[in-house]
Length: 489
Image 1 (cartoon, rainbow, N blue to C red):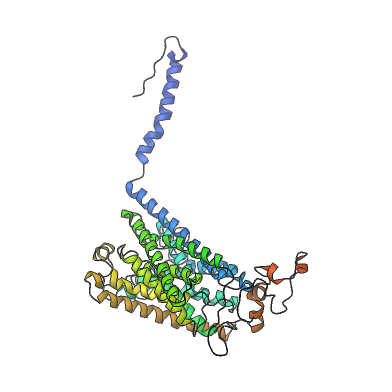
Image 2: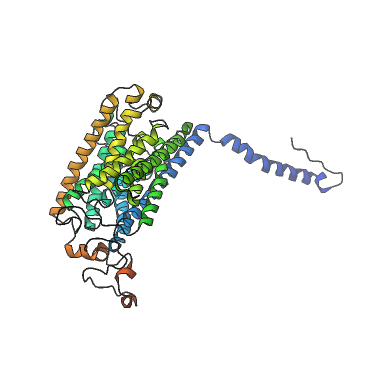
């Protein structure tokens, strides 16, 4: 109890003084009393903490867009460096708009076989049907939006340096509105793949996100054809080096960082600190991928190819994504190491027939297939029971059942995405056109599509840089100053 000594004859000894003291005491004690009465419950604090972590994870996943931009710009020639910026910004914007309107509802609005039917046009605390949506629901919407846009970003790495910008816009709308929601719903929202056997295991999207993006990229490459000069008269592939390995490396490291939110955020909460275990396992998968790719490219060429090592990190991350919530720590570097081997072998094999400038078909496609299948081998009985999805893998006595379910998921994902993507790209090609002209490809997409160069000092003579607002006319092949290309423009 608070005691105040009042001296005889002082002002406080008066009735007015005593009233003032009482007023001070009330002022001090009332807030504490109110706080004690209105203090949030543990459940409220827990929910707010979970939502906070989910949004931090969503921000990390968003930052992966910067990683994709830097990786793709680094692997492009200087005359195509600037277009990567516009592509990332416009695609993310289109993806966000379509996801808000229809994509999220189709992906997560209910548990039908192929598509959901609620959750469209979220706003003012409800969806289009008037169903209430709380802060946690909006957080989940935002987190899953980032996944959709990462999958969309994967599509375009394989199309660098020869695709029309308009094709990005059309396909982005179809991808975010139909293709990705279909696969996400079937695997994560009570759809078809959750009903095959004991259910597919794809914790954060080796198949849903990465194989989906890579399969769409595969369809695009088939309709686009290779870059001019990629294959010689003898049909053998020629190297077309990217202009900046430092940008590539920075892009890989940003993607690596973003993956901690990608996989760790897929716990959706902080309960039991499961997210910390997932992040640690994710990192182990990444280092396994680096070591696997480094080992194989050295054995094959006696050179430590920078691009291959970078793709090894990405392949390791892609491979561990499906199992990051299902496998024990010891299995993660093994899964990643095999992913590193797969990406090197895949890039070298695919390059003989298909022009994939960044190796996305291997790093996200083949490694995504391996990562999805790896759950059927390495999923532990402890984690399968804890997560409540599927069975233990073959190495934990679960037999071949889960491996079979994983294989079905791979086949369904590839088939559905390839068919819808092929129809879409065929329609684009037949109407607005899919590929730029030879002259535009020679000049570079920076000047042909955007009217400026990413590196103007390399391609515009110094006198033309004087003055503002006088763009250089499109006159054909730019100066090769600073270009590292080994093939004719």
